[in-house]
Length: 118
Figure 1 (cartoon, rainbow, N blue to C red):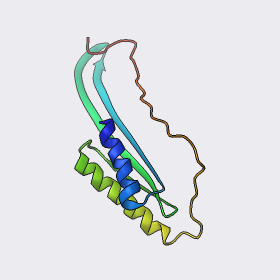
Figure 2 (cartoon, rainbow, N blue to C red):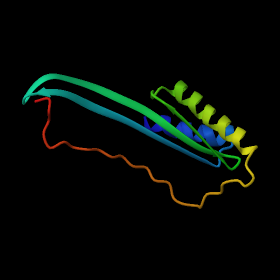
Figure 3 (cartoon, rainbow, N blue to C red):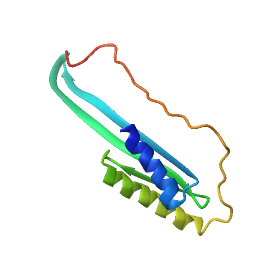
């Protein structure tokens, strides 16, 4: 997965001449409980996943998101974000310029105190 996300940021920079490219992916496992008078009436589990892409092209921001980790979907999303930024850049009087900083790659997890499925 990390390789795919890195390829997408590289695509924005190499193919669309983005000065900046950011990808944020998340996969959330959820448990929904319906409780009535102290008793669990229903329990449902689900997974939500998606990717948000932000790019800076010709001094303008572009954004796109997709509810998939599929490479072709991500390619289309980065293309949309870059085209959006390019279109906006034509109307900007002053381009956005970012300060130079180091990249950060991070993973965040949340542990529950009690597993509601057990």
